[in-house]
Each structure stands twice: as C-alpha cells, then as structure tokens.
Length: 89
Image (cartoon, rainbow, N blue to C red):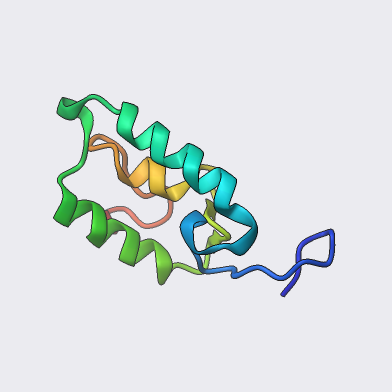
C-alpha cells in the first residue's frame, strides 16, 4: 500500500512503526509527555487500547479513519473512548 506520493506505509501501524512517521512520532512523544498525570491512562491500559487499535480496520498509519485522531494520543488520555464500538475501550 502506498500514500499519495508513492511511498509505502503500513495501514495498521502506529506512528512509531511508520518509516516516514519518525518526525511525527517524536512530536507525539512530546504530546504524550505533556498530558497531565491525572488525565493520563495507566500504562497497562494504554498498551491494551493500542493493541485493540492495531486490530481495528479503521486504523490507517497512526490515524483513526472515523474521527481523524492520532490513536496514540487519544488512547493515552483516560477520559477518551473509542469512536467506533461502544465499550471497545
């Protein structure tokens, strides 16, 4: 699969897994670090959410095709929910 510039990308990958996403992955790390601790998802729950996102057909190179969010950022916030299936996370 390729993007509009003919470069390959992984449709079910997170930003850190996309070769062209290194700069965005570094920026994402900064955004995640800026989430206040009281609003941050616990590590185990965060990993679980991301594993569910990786299995979702709406994940496309780190973005949710339903809402347009960066799934790594959305999953890191304790009060956020999956926009697809109620209860998925």
